[in-house]
Amino acid sequence: MLLSLVVLAVNSIILYVVPEGRIAYWADWRFLGLTKGDWGAQHTTVGVLFLIAGILHIFYNWKPIVAYMKNKARQIRIFTGSFNVALAVTAIFIVGTYYNIPPMSTILQISESVKDTAATEYGEPPYGHAESSSLKMFAKRENLDLEKSIRLLREAGLVVNGAEDTIKDIAGQNKLSPKAIHEIVTSPNC
Image 1 (cartoon, rainbow, N blue to C red):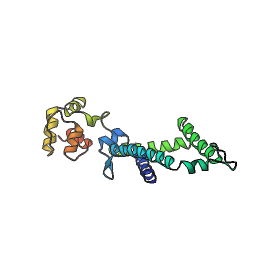
Image 2 (image 1 turned 45 degrees about the vertical axis):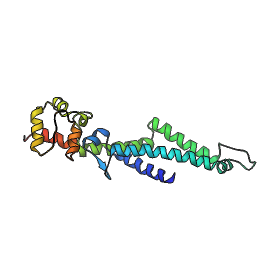
Image 3 (image 1 turned 180 degrees about the horizontal axis):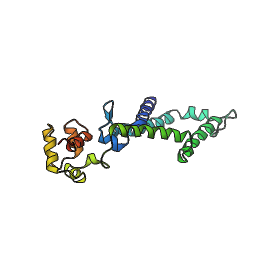
């Protein structure tokens, strides 16, 4: 349970600063070799592991947990001082986030600021999920000549199987980002 909590904490920090999806996928953003999707998938699966470990922890420690919840008269009290403080802090964070109240709003604003910086650093795709478009659709949406785009990519030494290849597939096959493919086919020098 402790190990999955540590991994969740690390994943949460990374997902807090990772660029928005459209930018991360466009620039083929990676941290420690993992993409935004990889970090998100780990966060989800390790979160499930944490829940399972928590359930097992409660199951195997049921007697000590119940004993901890008893007062001096040996009566079970759920709303103890510690529990009430934890409940209040959790409620404040939930409500504060919903109503965009500091410091919760500040936490979110910092994340947005970091993500906006990534947009400047890595660039914006020409449209949402452009990397998932076939070269044919990409050329059409960007008003590019398809045959010329294929020729430019091949002249740059890239492998292009055909017009139905997605920008992401072409980029991956050639160890480039989708952004680099875009730059090749829209270069003003060509």
